[in-house]
Length: 604
Image (cartoon, rainbow, N blue to C red; front, side):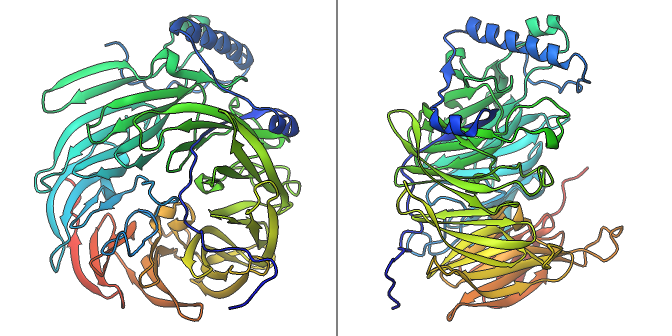
């Protein structure tokens, strides 16, 4: 064993986070003043107070819009009445590739010991995986698009975008005790879109962002309903009801106006069924969710009027972070706030460990690559919970000057940040002392990683794009990094897949699967045709890579699948890949096909 004078422990890569939060809101304020201040949300004491505040702010918005075009209204709803694979806990099948062990995330497929449930293509299918070939047990059509599933015992919840214009969310509870006779029990229709959801044991929390009601005149401001109304249906009895989603006193607002939309957190006890046992809301919008074992994080960009030029963005925007506790308890409680400078790239920019919240941000927004080019930098801020407040205790800044963050992964006492413009600096962070986080090492290579996944023994797998020295992209690549010595991270292996190749793993970590017992990594892969007018890809399927002894990364094989690959899973020693076209079963050692079950599209 190599000894170091300044050892950086790598043994705690997957500890359970011990505090919980909900992050919301980007506001214009001095980054330094915001960091020193401790903002808190204010609860409305009555419906009258909520309405008066909303009408006052809406009137000011109307005045600001007086010379700007107003977008058309969105139709309303309602109205008047798997953690990282661990052989000890999941020896026979994989689960959703989640960020935090023990905190389930919604996904297009869910597995248990004998069954797979797939919502790929808008049809819920129950599949038996116990035989030599998968067997379709039952199926039913689910209204809406983009279905994602949460599974708890014999109760499954499907979350989908609904409405003619995608302006609503439908939650559907399905009884799957008899997978040969799937039965819809309840549905809830909520205006707005589901940001995401998390499940801690039997407790599920769904975060929904509802835009402000449409108004273009003072009369419409006076008549507007500011709280979203949901439609509840109990299918067996046929009973239905429409009511406000959140009580007025359960709505909070930031100290500075952050829009008239409503970010609702619905808490469900899945042992009891799909009806909220608690509901809370913040008058703002939300677009990112991170869950810890005890609660939830949600991040949002600052509310801005339409048409703001990226070059006119404030140079010192900050992200407000609000803490809501709950975990496996059927309640959700607001517990404090803080502010950090800059923008988040997604849920992996947030992480809780040993009572400290780490937040990685970039000064420039991820959706505006050219804004203030060359002036951007990234940083990691460490916050601690102190008497219902979040207080900044440490910070490391100056990461990737002139670049922006492409990937983040926090793992116990260490963290990794990838920035990119022309080359890929992989920053290795020593976070053992939360009051003095520091850059321990740095590695520059062509291209970038958009997703980072630990694969054991001090190794980190990166999925992203290769690039020239000038930053011109050259197609998908997978890199294997040895980060056992944070002071000297090294890329020990790399696999490229050629020009015009890409993988959805870059945008969605759930498309990636790593089966730790055999070191098998599977990722969907497409290769576009040279002619951009040809919509048919040259290749649409998946590739399997094996992390082997001696820090090797070898391609096991690749295969095509009808309509590409959406998700991969291991079950009973075999590899299952799901697409809208069907379910493929393969030998996990060679990836050779053993069985195929076609998914017939629903009748038109």
